[in-house]
Length: 76
Image 1: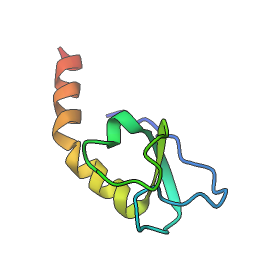
Image 2 (image 1 turned 60 degrees about the vertical axis):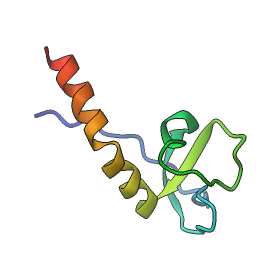
Image 3 (image 1 turned 180 degrees about the horizontal axis):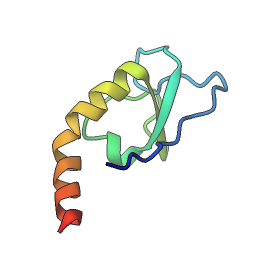
Image 4 (image 1 turned 180 degrees about the vertical axis):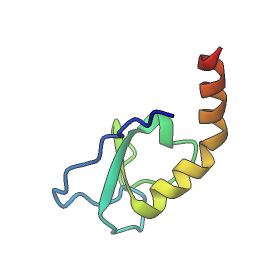
């Protein structure tokens, strides 16, 4: 199985954009991908959202089924 290297953010003191979270951001996603999972952000008028490690884990778990279906669709 080939694993793609996901882009990791530069550590330029970026913080997680989920409201009431001050952890360091490790990944960035488009708002359209994340808005269904998290409803409260520090600034809702942005195109990209920075997520910390904990919020990324939540995002990853919640989108697991969608990613699996996408993979199956492309496999055939």
